[in-house]
Image (spheres, rainbow, N blue to C red):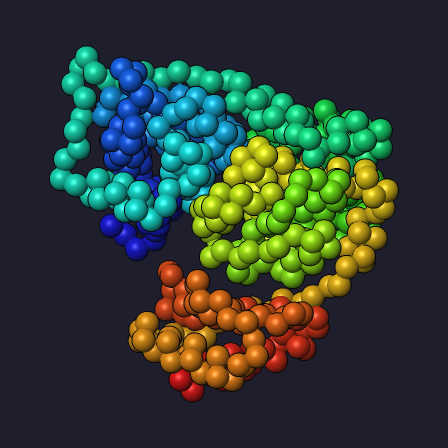
Length: 466
Ligand code: MG
């Protein structure tokens, strides 16, 4: 296999036309189908697998290949077509399917595509299940169905409509309040799958929408990750149209970023912070401890938002599946990732941009404040990221780095779930080896850029010395 093919727990990603080929996709889909069949066949019924894709030009080709692979091992395919990633996850639950395959390379550039595997719970596969699928994909032969046991394909054209209806039915979403405000919203869906769901959601929320890049042809006109440097056109649109808010999503619509009313991207961490405020601030519901889960690299703006309402913040290793499983374990009220991925279990424990949008607008409607005023209400922080060569340093050598960091900062709170994260009340430093490159990643957050830089420099120095 060529070296640009990346195999991870929840899927396989590669460059279209070089290493990610229809043959390979069919094989992995067949392997996943075999795993699905062994994973709770439901009565006499054939094992059913939901199949969806984002807007990439390679999507139809790979969808056909994935369907062929699934049929060849005797699975039935429920084809939901061109949809958001969370729409597939919801469809797996809706149909009580044995799993789902999503063809998307998320925010990666146009030349990439990937298969992502969802288990029967609608969550991306964990390590054990992922390893089993990988083993099956590498096996000399797979148990193919004979002529009378081949599966069938059924199209499900209602998956997006169900998703939208479910979002609008959430108690935390104030549809009436949002509609009353008649928000002016500027939207950029980067010609990804967002065009199939976000304009309609905004319309049903009574917003006055002005949009760019809502075609769903997968021809991304800019780098598709919704980070500030990629949202200049959206910022200009907000300015020109005097919009109340600008909204951008990534190509598979599980991440959402916000631009304020002056056209400035406010950073993806605020999406989860706003969603938390929307949910926890609605009313003092329930009793006992309210838990919010985010990952180890998520900004303190998220922690501040949760603490403002007396919630406890628990951090999980980076990765949607880690956060999702921790949320289920702790019965978290809301959670997600600082990259704009909001997970709201009242609907589904997966990152969902339509949910994020509905919650953010609910907050704006309730607070009657501008986006920039909401940002200004809480402390701001600076995040600095760096990397150093790991060289031949193995896991034990990393232990040396961690030990010297802990000795240098004995007063800090240490979290060792994934590398080492040292935390103080208003700052943190996270040091971890990359899983894909021979480097050590350093990330720090503090009240000022200079403070964050100082933490990074300390980390760098100890990495070099250990
Ligand atoms: Mg994504």
